[in-house]
Image (cartoon, rainbow, N blue to C red; front, side):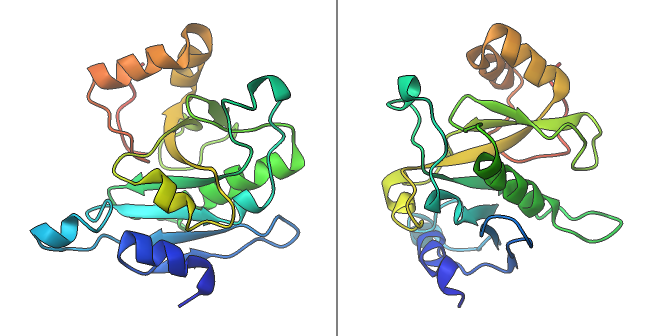
Length: 204
């Protein structure tokens, strides 16, 4: 098994079935995709998010983000990204796995800009990345169903693993105007789970 993802495989209880390699000229950040693993009742207790497809970046935490000093106690400078999905989402035209592509782009951005990510933050790629042209932005939170300290120990140097959820441009605008907590209230009202779901219905 690829040694980059061997600790992740031990944590999630299954090996990756796809690895997106670093892109030429970009930071050395790869993304592993871990398929669902059917398991019995007792094994489920030891297999985090066993019924979902899980994507994990590897290498983002090797380089700290430029977190301003006034919020450094709130937002760790070294993180990795995770996306939890109902399935693997592939581009209908070229077969590319666009969840891994999105995570890789997001993970590389802090290396070339002054941006940083943390829970309750949003970001945008300014262009559609999946089947819904409204989905051009992302919401960052904490993943459900994982033991954070143990997962961080599987990364190169992460102090936190942050989940990524696609949102629409109008949802991001609402979060910027009213606060991310209000957007979460809307998600809870409409029973929107913390998943990377490019097909979900927008709440705004």
